[in-house]
Amino acid sequence: MSLLDSALVRLLPAVPKPVVQLFSSRYIAGSTLVEAVECVRELNAGGAMATVDVLGEEITREEETRAITQAYRDVFDAIDEASLDSNVSVKLTALGLELSYDLCRENLLEVVSAAAGYGNFVRIDMEDSSATDATLRLYRELREDGHDNVGVVLQARLRRTLDDVHALADLQPSVRLCKGIYLEPGTIAFTEYEAVRANFVRCLDALLEARCYVGVATHDEWLIGESLARISQRGLGPLEYELQMLLGVREERREELVTEGHRLRVYVPFGEHWYGYSVRRLQENPAMAGTIAKATAGRVLRLGSG
Ligand SMILES: Cc1cc2nc3c(=O)[nH]c(=O)nc-3n(C[C@H](O)[C@H](O)[C@H](O)COP(=O)(O)OP(=O)(O)OC[C@H]3O[C@@H](n4cnc5c(N)ncnc54)[C@H](O)[C@@H]3O)c2cc1C
Image (cartoon, rainbow, N blue to C red):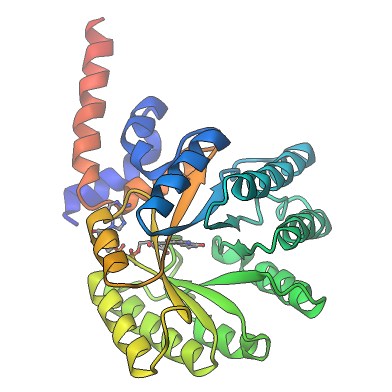
């Protein structure tokens, strides 16, 4: 990314919301469950699985966390009704982690139990490093209470992750392995691109060694190749791992991987709280910052002349 692009990326939070919405629409299924169902139906028709995320990161009140929990119940009903091939992904802050651990636990348990009623599965997304300990603790509590239809996410960016893999190994967890979107300080995170990649591979090796089911979540071609080579070296069958990608990212490559016979799951976010997710996706898009800057300048000029 050029210096100019990096500067623009830092300025994205100052870009007017309508502009952010315009450019981020490819990353989000829509604001309603009906739109999410339609999106998953299309993905399934193309041979991909899905995981549905109810966007709810900016919530601050208990009632809102209850509403998100109910929204997940509605998602399971809809998945069942339309016979979709999809599980769900939840963010613990949307279920109240920053309000109270017990409230979050109660909400998560409700989502996980609803999933179990349909024989479905819940993936707990990983948020910034302030939430890592609580997320892993809650995950362990659920598993030790016998809830097996739940998985977690680990971030290769964090220095602690290899230790977390070893600490979780007794649970033989289902893990989504990703680089990690939240930029963390060098004291706790790898900050160089190649170091994050190297740690991804180290963590993947440790997860496969521990016979964990891994969702390899990356669009990085080098990492896709390394991961598939390792999976093949271990002789894993098509049902023993999956690839994961975000909606709206590298769609042609996604289709190729499906055609090659890999199980591939697409992350499908929907809902009213689209803003935080959208800004993060746009900040990662190498080609987007400059385009947005131009669109924003155009809008500001039009406003100025109107
Ligand atoms: C299914 C899934 C779930 C995830 N869940 C979490 C989570 O719970 N917690 C968390 O911290 N992170 C999560 N992430 C995000 C992840 O950590 C990375 O931030 C993100 O995937 C980008 O890293 P990358 O491995 O794709 O590599 P990058 O090096 O960032 O990207 C590789 C290439 O992919 C393309 N690309 C990547 N992003 C975009 C984009 N937004 N728009 C257009 N092209 C793009 C570009 O061609 C880029 O060169 C998830 C990612 C996926 C795929």
